[in-house]
Length: 327
Image (tube, rainbow, N blue to C red; front, side):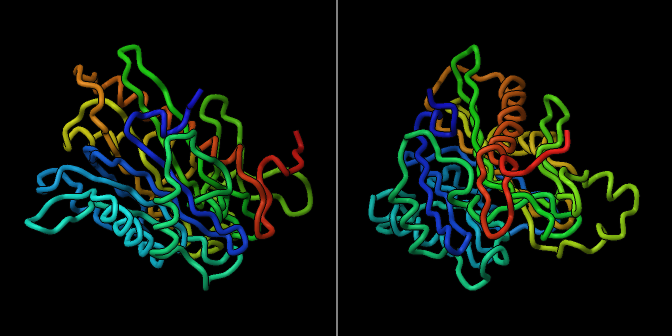
């Protein structure tokens, strides 16, 4: 059973993974075009073509979304995806020209192993060529390769982040799914139980600290331990329901509630959290937006948890599954 983003009919996902340099990118394709939306939060975003996805802009379809490591350099990966789509004759016709609509967001992974290697056009092209409808690979792959979390007390005490996905099918038959690359300054918490899954590692004994507690209690190490611009959680919320561009933007907005459920603190000045929405319009009966929104929140939160649960250690940063716990 496919419980990842590709359970949404019309979507394909491909990863490019560079474990040696702790970076990568992930491409989400909709060859027929999807109603697109986006919501950008946090103080340090890095994006491409987000203005075009806003309501009232002329183009109402997106053909791909690229999630990439490499900080601002990683935005170049989208150019490779555009080249791939042009070769596949996919895009918006403007006279004789063909223009694929490719939106992108990046996260910062430059210092985990190296700051000199980052995804570019060739890596984006490779991820697009690898895209398919199989269940999406999770953990330390694609845009999640160099991701880390729990950095409020310094990057040296972080826990490995990654990329995760989750999906739900509604009683009316519509599917809602999320894919999230988790590189947050804050903790990751299981919103269903309240359990801290990943936070700053303790120095002299097993276990993890609470980032929120450290901030609220005035821990001096939390003030400037993590440089600005060095975090960010990015992802896609998708459905096969038929939505307008305005409704897709609403779905992107509400999906941030899922981030806030599982990442604490969320949307900080040190993060550039960005969620895209893609509605493939494969199901034509009217969708109940309240139900879709509730599902979007839940699958986004679950995708964040999956990213942490499936990650493996890299660059000296251990994963949650590799840590010794004190309780």
